[in-house]
Image (cartoon, rainbow, N blue to C red; front, top):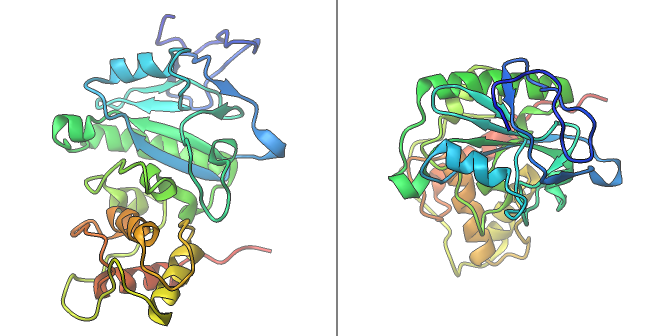
Length: 267
Protein backbone atom coordinates (compact mmCIF):
# COMPACT_ATOMS: atom_id res chain seq x y z
CA UNK A 1 0.00 0.00 0.00
CA UNK A 2 1.36 3.40 -0.96
CA UNK A 3 2.20 5.69 1.95
CA UNK A 4 2.09 9.46 2.10
CA UNK A 5 -1.52 9.82 0.92
CA UNK A 6 -3.88 11.67 3.19
CA UNK A 7 -7.04 10.98 1.22
CA UNK A 8 -9.58 8.19 1.73
CA UNK A 9 -8.17 4.69 2.01
CA UNK A 10 -9.64 1.21 1.99
CA UNK A 11 -9.34 -0.49 5.39
CA UNK A 12 -10.49 -4.09 5.69
CA UNK A 13 -14.27 -4.18 5.94
CA UNK A 14 -14.43 -0.38 6.36
CA UNK A 15 -15.28 1.67 3.31
CA UNK A 16 -12.99 4.62 4.06
CA UNK A 17 -10.18 5.67 6.34
CA UNK A 18 -9.13 9.28 6.64
CA UNK A 19 -6.43 10.22 9.12
CA UNK A 20 -7.60 11.67 12.43
CA UNK A 21 -4.36 13.62 12.71
CA UNK A 22 -3.97 16.20 9.92
CA UNK A 23 -0.22 15.59 9.55
CA UNK A 24 -0.39 11.79 9.41
CA UNK A 25 0.18 9.53 6.44
CA UNK A 26 -2.00 6.43 6.23
CA UNK A 27 -0.93 2.80 6.08
CA UNK A 28 -4.02 0.76 6.90
CA UNK A 29 -3.53 -2.29 9.12
CA UNK A 30 -6.08 -5.13 8.99
CA UNK A 31 -5.45 -5.83 12.68
CA UNK A 32 -8.29 -4.08 14.47
CA UNK A 33 -11.90 -4.51 15.56
CA UNK A 34 -14.76 -2.59 17.15
CA UNK A 35 -14.39 -1.21 20.65
CA UNK A 36 -16.33 -3.44 23.04
CA UNK A 37 -19.24 -2.66 25.36
CA UNK A 38 -19.59 0.88 24.09
CA UNK A 39 -16.20 1.91 25.46
CA UNK A 40 -14.49 5.02 24.16
CA UNK A 41 -10.86 6.15 24.35
CA UNK A 42 -10.04 7.41 27.83
CA UNK A 43 -6.38 6.33 27.97
CA UNK A 44 -3.39 7.12 25.75
CA UNK A 45 -0.65 4.47 25.76
CA UNK A 46 2.90 5.19 24.59
CA UNK A 47 5.12 2.33 23.39
CA UNK A 48 8.49 1.99 21.72
CA UNK A 49 8.76 -0.32 18.74
CA UNK A 50 11.78 -2.25 20.00
CA UNK A 51 12.83 -3.26 16.48
CA UNK A 52 15.81 -2.39 14.29
CA UNK A 53 13.91 0.03 12.05
CA UNK A 54 10.62 1.87 11.93
CA UNK A 55 9.89 0.30 8.55
CA UNK A 56 10.20 -3.17 10.05
CA UNK A 57 7.84 -2.23 12.87
CA UNK A 58 5.32 -0.67 10.50
CA UNK A 59 5.39 -3.76 8.31
CA UNK A 60 4.85 -6.03 11.32
CA UNK A 61 1.92 -3.93 12.56
CA UNK A 62 0.29 -4.30 9.14
CA UNK A 63 0.91 -8.05 8.87
CA UNK A 64 -2.28 -10.08 9.49
CA UNK A 65 -0.21 -12.89 10.97
CA UNK A 66 1.22 -10.65 13.69
CA UNK A 67 -2.16 -10.08 15.37
CA UNK A 68 -0.85 -6.73 16.66
CA UNK A 69 -1.34 -3.13 15.62
CA UNK A 70 -1.31 0.44 16.89
CA UNK A 71 -3.18 3.55 15.93
CA UNK A 72 0.01 5.47 15.12
CA UNK A 73 3.72 5.07 14.47
CA UNK A 74 6.01 8.07 15.04
CA UNK A 75 9.39 7.97 13.26
CA UNK A 76 12.68 9.49 14.42
CA UNK A 77 12.38 12.30 11.85
CA UNK A 78 8.89 13.22 13.07
CA UNK A 79 6.94 11.45 10.33
CA UNK A 80 3.62 10.11 11.61
CA UNK A 81 1.81 7.12 10.12
CA UNK A 82 -1.73 6.24 11.17
CA UNK A 83 -2.57 2.56 10.87
CA UNK A 84 -5.94 2.23 12.61
CA UNK A 85 -8.68 4.87 12.94
CA UNK A 86 -9.04 6.25 16.44
CA UNK A 87 -12.64 5.07 16.46
CA UNK A 88 -11.51 1.43 16.23
CA UNK A 89 -9.90 -1.00 18.67
CA UNK A 90 -6.25 -1.52 17.79
CA UNK A 91 -4.37 -4.49 19.26
CA UNK A 92 -1.48 -2.87 21.12
CA UNK A 93 -1.99 -3.26 24.87
CA UNK A 94 -2.05 -7.04 25.30
CA UNK A 95 -2.76 -8.45 28.74
CA UNK A 96 -2.90 -5.32 30.87
CA UNK A 97 -4.90 -3.36 33.41
CA UNK A 98 -5.37 0.15 34.76
CA UNK A 99 -7.71 1.27 37.54
CA UNK A 100 -9.41 -2.13 37.39
CA UNK A 101 -10.03 -1.99 33.63
CA UNK A 102 -8.62 -5.04 31.83
CA UNK A 103 -9.77 -4.41 28.26
CA UNK A 104 -7.33 -1.59 27.70
CA UNK A 105 -7.50 -1.95 23.91
CA UNK A 106 -11.18 -0.96 23.95
CA UNK A 107 -10.60 2.23 25.93
CA UNK A 108 -7.26 3.45 24.62
CA UNK A 109 -5.29 4.93 21.74
CA UNK A 110 -1.89 3.33 21.15
CA UNK A 111 1.19 5.09 19.75
CA UNK A 112 4.33 3.21 18.73
CA UNK A 113 7.42 5.44 18.93
CA UNK A 114 10.23 4.23 16.70
CA UNK A 115 13.06 3.36 19.06
CA UNK A 116 15.09 0.18 19.24
CA UNK A 117 14.99 -0.04 23.03
CA UNK A 118 17.26 -2.79 24.39
CA UNK A 119 17.87 -4.14 20.89
CA UNK A 120 19.86 -1.01 20.02
CA UNK A 121 21.18 -0.09 23.45
CA UNK A 122 18.31 2.21 24.46
CA UNK A 123 18.97 5.12 22.07
CA UNK A 124 17.80 8.61 22.93
CA UNK A 125 14.54 9.91 21.47
CA UNK A 126 15.34 12.62 18.89
CA UNK A 127 13.98 16.11 19.52
CA UNK A 128 12.17 16.14 16.17
CA UNK A 129 10.43 12.89 17.06
CA UNK A 130 9.28 14.15 20.45
CA UNK A 131 8.04 17.41 18.91
CA UNK A 132 5.87 15.47 16.46
CA UNK A 133 4.71 13.13 19.23
CA UNK A 134 3.63 16.04 21.39
CA UNK A 135 1.65 17.52 18.50
CA UNK A 136 -0.04 14.16 17.92
CA UNK A 137 -0.79 13.60 21.62
CA UNK A 138 -2.28 17.06 22.04
CA UNK A 139 -4.76 16.37 19.29
CA UNK A 140 -5.70 12.95 20.70
CA UNK A 141 -6.24 14.09 24.29
CA UNK A 142 -8.30 17.04 23.05
CA UNK A 143 -10.47 14.98 20.71
CA UNK A 144 -11.20 12.34 23.33
CA UNK A 145 -11.05 14.41 26.53
CA UNK A 146 -8.34 12.15 27.97
CA UNK A 147 -7.30 13.15 31.47
CA UNK A 148 -3.65 14.01 32.00
CA UNK A 149 -3.03 11.13 34.42
CA UNK A 150 -4.28 8.68 31.79
CA UNK A 151 -1.36 9.35 29.45
CA UNK A 152 0.60 6.22 30.28
CA UNK A 153 3.53 4.00 29.44
CA UNK A 154 3.01 0.47 28.18
CA UNK A 155 4.97 -0.56 31.27
CA UNK A 156 2.41 1.16 33.53
CA UNK A 157 -0.42 -1.08 32.33
CA UNK A 158 1.63 -4.27 31.88
CA UNK A 159 4.46 -4.13 34.44
CA UNK A 160 5.03 -7.89 34.42
CA UNK A 161 5.64 -7.96 30.66
CA UNK A 162 6.79 -4.58 29.38
CA UNK A 163 9.36 -1.86 30.08
CA UNK A 164 8.58 0.54 27.23
CA UNK A 165 8.99 3.36 26.44
CA UNK A 166 11.63 3.09 29.17
CA UNK A 167 13.38 5.35 31.66
CA UNK A 168 15.02 7.44 28.92
CA UNK A 169 11.66 8.63 27.59
CA UNK A 170 11.29 12.41 28.21
CA UNK A 171 8.02 12.55 30.14
CA UNK A 172 8.82 16.04 31.52
CA UNK A 173 9.00 17.44 27.98
CA UNK A 174 5.50 16.15 27.29
CA UNK A 175 4.22 17.53 30.58
CA UNK A 176 5.74 20.95 29.88
CA UNK A 177 3.83 20.92 26.58
CA UNK A 178 0.55 20.08 28.29
CA UNK A 179 0.53 16.30 27.84
CA UNK A 180 0.44 13.90 30.78
CA UNK A 181 0.82 14.14 34.55
CA UNK A 182 4.15 14.75 36.26
CA UNK A 183 5.86 16.11 39.33
CA UNK A 184 9.60 16.50 39.73
CA UNK A 185 10.76 13.34 41.54
CA UNK A 186 11.95 13.69 45.11
CA UNK A 187 15.74 13.35 45.46
CA UNK A 188 17.15 9.86 45.92
CA UNK A 189 18.50 9.58 49.46
CA UNK A 190 18.70 7.27 52.44
CA UNK A 191 15.99 6.47 54.93
CA UNK A 192 13.39 3.80 55.50
CA UNK A 193 12.44 1.63 52.55
CA UNK A 194 10.33 -1.39 51.64
CA UNK A 195 11.40 -4.24 49.40
CA UNK A 196 10.62 -7.80 48.42
CA UNK A 197 9.47 -9.87 51.39
CA UNK A 198 8.45 -7.01 53.68
CA UNK A 199 5.02 -7.17 55.30
CA UNK A 200 2.74 -5.01 57.38
CA UNK A 201 0.43 -2.03 57.41
CA UNK A 202 2.96 0.39 55.86
CA UNK A 203 3.28 -1.96 52.87
CA UNK A 204 -0.51 -2.08 52.61
CA UNK A 205 -0.62 1.73 52.63
CA UNK A 206 1.97 1.82 49.85
CA UNK A 207 -0.03 -0.68 47.81
CA UNK A 208 -3.17 1.39 48.35
CA UNK A 209 -1.44 4.47 46.97
CA UNK A 210 -0.20 2.58 43.90
CA UNK A 211 -3.67 1.15 43.29
CA UNK A 212 -5.28 4.55 43.78
CA UNK A 213 -3.08 5.96 41.06
CA UNK A 214 -4.06 3.05 38.80
CA UNK A 215 -1.46 0.30 39.08
CA UNK A 216 -2.74 -3.27 39.22
CA UNK A 217 -1.16 -4.35 42.51
CA UNK A 218 -2.74 -6.38 45.34
CA UNK A 219 -3.58 -4.67 48.62
CA UNK A 220 -2.60 -7.38 51.06
CA UNK A 221 0.24 -5.93 53.11
CA UNK A 222 2.80 -8.23 51.50
CA UNK A 223 5.57 -6.79 49.33
CA UNK A 224 5.53 -9.61 46.80
CA UNK A 225 6.59 -9.79 43.16
CA UNK A 226 3.46 -7.98 41.90
CA UNK A 227 4.15 -5.03 44.18
CA UNK A 228 7.81 -5.00 43.17
CA UNK A 229 6.81 -4.92 39.48
CA UNK A 230 4.41 -2.07 40.20
CA UNK A 231 7.20 -0.10 41.89
CA UNK A 232 9.54 -0.77 38.96
CA UNK A 233 6.93 0.50 36.50
CA UNK A 234 6.26 3.57 38.64
CA UNK A 235 9.97 4.36 38.85
CA UNK A 236 10.49 3.98 35.09
CA UNK A 237 7.83 6.60 34.50
CA UNK A 238 8.10 8.94 37.46
CA UNK A 239 11.50 8.39 39.17
CA UNK A 240 13.79 7.18 36.36
CA UNK A 241 17.06 8.13 38.08
CA UNK A 242 17.03 4.83 39.98
CA UNK A 243 14.85 1.93 38.82
CA UNK A 244 15.39 -0.89 41.31
CA UNK A 245 11.95 -1.96 42.57
CA UNK A 246 12.69 -0.76 46.10
CA UNK A 247 10.14 1.61 47.63
CA UNK A 248 12.55 4.11 49.13
CA UNK A 249 11.75 7.55 50.55
CA UNK A 250 12.13 9.19 47.14
CA UNK A 251 9.72 6.77 45.47
CA UNK A 252 7.07 7.03 48.17
CA UNK A 253 7.28 10.82 48.36
CA UNK A 254 7.01 11.14 44.58
CA UNK A 255 3.97 8.85 44.52
CA UNK A 256 2.31 10.83 47.30
CA UNK A 257 2.95 14.13 45.54
CA UNK A 258 1.59 12.76 42.25
CA UNK A 259 -1.62 11.73 43.98
CA UNK A 260 -1.89 15.11 45.69
CA UNK A 261 -1.39 16.87 42.34
CA UNK A 262 -4.09 14.96 40.47
CA UNK A 263 -6.50 17.35 38.75
CA UNK A 264 -9.98 17.52 40.20
CA UNK A 265 -12.68 15.45 38.53
CA UNK A 266 -15.31 17.74 37.06
CA UNK A 267 -18.89 16.94 37.98
